[in-house]
Length: 359
Image 1 (cartoon, helix red, strand yellow):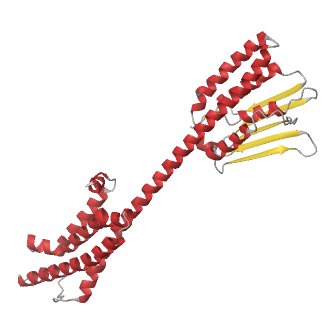
Image 2: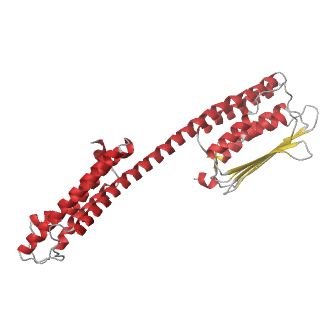
Image 3: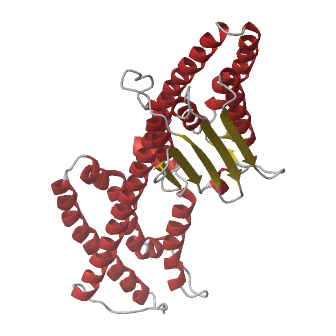
């Protein structure tokens, strides 16, 4: 009953009605317009589409589900092997009776053929036609099951990715908060006024983290504002010997979107490993956005932390890699490493599917 109700509600119901309506109307074409058609003659001639109808829906609603869902292939083959020849023989007898009545009444149809009582070729043809109906029914059911399985797989994969991304987001936020609060704590011991300014900067950033980052994609302008706030916050506590350059280039009228909280870890990493207390330091941040791609390049002097300083443990970069692979699969490149014969570390990400995110 459940499968029947599902069939009634299916999108292909009207197509099935049209197909079977045409099949049951076809026998009417065997009668000449000037000849009287009786219900008896029509029912005898309609035995063929009726047999196909019975076999089709027995397979579609019962036998095919038994075979696919319950692995009862023996039942599927046994019922079909017994049912199809019986129905073919019944159709054979009905058609013979149809032509007998037709000739007895002196009528001349379009296709008057004397088959005799045991025409093997006619019987084999009917078996073949009914087998085709059973095959189509099984094929339609299995294809629908395949589509459903794929839809469920896609839904499961999408749910898994969403859950994983949410987990990554909640990992990023504490990591980001830990670094930022440590910076403000250090600043309170040096300059209260600057610490107050830093708290204001932090409030704008938290608004972005708590609200904007809940969306799968945000306007790239919002992400740039977030990065600028972070850099401004960092500038308050670093010395003037550190050279910081920023260059953000996007079209004035653009609707390019980006996944939030991907680039911040790279900026954090640059401030963590790119600044020395005694040597000149450099951090250069560049972001350009075009209709076809987003390019983010950051390079900085490289002053690795000693073994005692294990804060972060590289979790930020691992999260960047994970989020890129989940959100932009096969649609990004990431080149990173120390430039030869220098102490400059560079990281360059290019995202290529921005057209898919434009609205």
